[in-house]
Length: 238
Image (cartoon, rainbow, N blue to C red; front, side, top):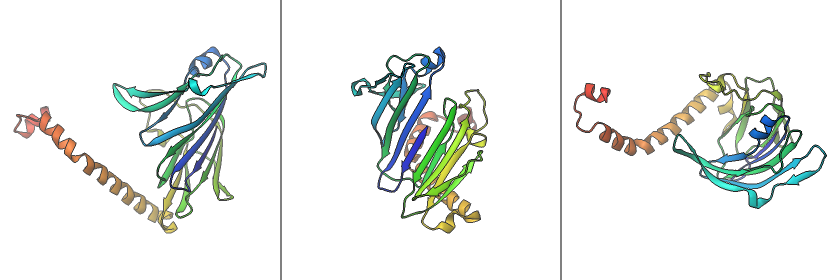
């Protein structure tokens, strides 16, 4: 797996490139359809894919076989997806595909989980940070270190397990490996105790803006739910 993030522009561009070996019929079933999910405000482009067969021949995905669809979970709209299937997939094949995701603003931070739905032999990440901002890198639950070369922040993680789908797991960020790139206007804000004051203030401001934007709808919903109820006990039971 390879991920390159260009954050040094008005847009943030994520370029992905994945390659996987299919060993079993279960793998064929799992990879029968690929969904590239994205939220409103994002754009997915430059999708390319191919299958390399055991006899070393290959077949490329035709653009007309890429479909856009809406994704729902528990009857709620979750976002959009670009979907496609690999032609003639069977055990022994290698699948390879890449795509680009773009959003029309740059990020104040970049969160990158290292694990995926399948085991990963090697995952390379390269980030071009915003030149006008101070940046710092962090890593959690992994011994992999960041390096810097030619204006890029680079990291390579190897031998990663697949994501667990067991119920009642602890919060994933407590035990799964993930890495982080953070920005500030002043490098001192990203150091030591100053960092947590800076980050906490930024999160508090973001949450305050979010809550303020939802106040009207919350009041309307509560007035509907508690219509005709006058005492606190009645409202709690409702």
